[in-house]
Image (spheres, rainbow, N blue to C red):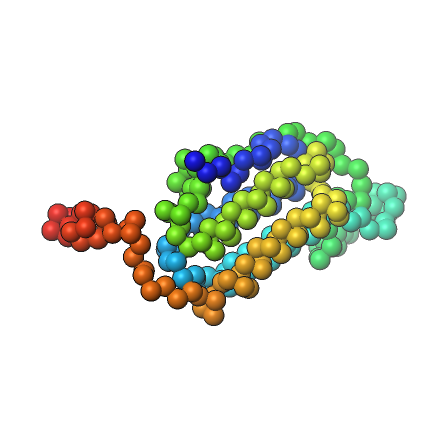
Length: 218
């Protein structure tokens, strides 16, 4: 039996930033494993490929925001701004920069558990196999996405409040690049394979009078 693709994931740690990325990965994965296109051996459409790229960019954006990168404000400046009644949250928002909590020592937080059932028993989080996902590249993509999930939970920064180090962020971005490469080299109409035999031997029993349920019996 194939090893569960979530094997090795740490299931409890305090880092809120990592938990946030995990939630985004799970949302993305649930949408992918619902796609009928992944039952096709040839590949997937441009529209689905565009969606996959957009979701990867969102993951990259979140990773950037939880990467530790404090600015040059002193603690005194931060405290003065906190007491300034004329400031609004938009004044504190750093746009493309990481979270402003990088600039000051934050309180410790409770350990949070990874809340999803990763065993493969959850119908929304199945393990991808050749039988439920004949599309080899799609299966490889989901497996790589699962690896990103696992590696995020194994970072040393999982014990931080909500950030990861620049080095760890670079490692995770390399994994995102692997996923992006699949979309560019194997995704979309231009990269579809020619499939002369669309119905596999394993699927023959489900054909009419091939052993499956006949139309008259439905």
